[in-house]
Image (cartoon, rainbow, N blue to C red; front, side, top):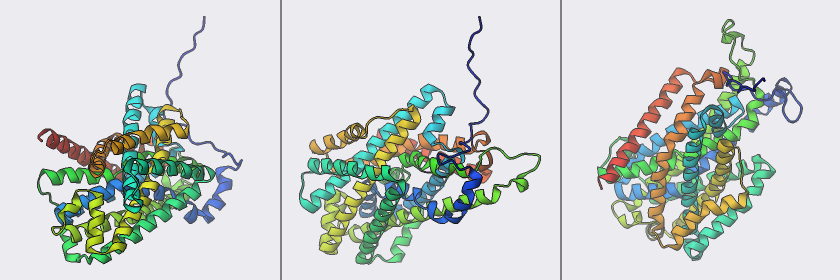
Length: 450
């Protein structure tokens, strides 16, 4: 009796479908793609970048500036450059394969590994949501006097109202996130101008250095708040079904070489525009963070060290030292970042579960599950700002679990075809991985050492 054998795993992943849902082939799509490329490729990185200016960034940057002055500015800038590299690799992975990073992990790795990656990714999403909801709740308390737990419920409810916009067209959601990012930049540039930050003082923070265990812990928090692992998963999903039909990612013919690759000019053009999208979005996000840290360092160190204790104390210090308009701008920026960040977090949660497990749960149920820890923290009276900083430190431990699969997949010609990383890119990505893991080990050692 014949038995059914399990087919062997193919040497490379299947390329995206040759004919898109609209019925046009890649060749038929190219004229339109060429004519509208600049517009169509700007957007996904802005959704990812909004997560880099969430309330967790507020907490770590204000605490770093108020406690150590501009000392940790170099950490912030380095983390932003690392984030650019990772977001570029994530976007390129989605374009080359037509699949998100979680989907590729499910296709390539054994089930226990996939389940482990999913579990830690869900923990990352929960910690991210905690930061966004707690930050938004603090903002509503500062603006309207709402109890923190009630403010958390309001932030969670508003994020649900934003989700249908994403379903009606990703472009609207991307534009909304871009507007939010621009508003945050404008608000904090105003804070810097109001603080009168001297450039020479800020430049002192460009020299690498630390000052004791406390600065190391804060450096880890800055890395966790800047290199957000959940948007590494999300960015690949944002580009996977939007641009993957433009090219066949199959390997080039070794006998003909790249000079005979008919799609090479278009592929290079796509990569240039992806880089531009990532560069613009991440520079804007980095500028917001730099402005926040520099203004805190200028205003609060060492004259108002109490601003490091909480975001509420920072809000009061802005009002006392600069004026009511500065305090209002800080609270509004915190609210915008919380609302935008939690919406992106919900989106990332769907990508994580759908990619790793191939399953989805109702949006309302996911919203309730991920916001519950934040509401419990707020209702229990735990220090909200300390909870924010702790959540960012926990996030830093999730970075390697997203980063290592990303590097392994983007360096693999069987997965990426002609889009495979260059050796220099892979070397930089591995160097980043080693540094991040080393930082996490140092953080663990400092925690256990007390």
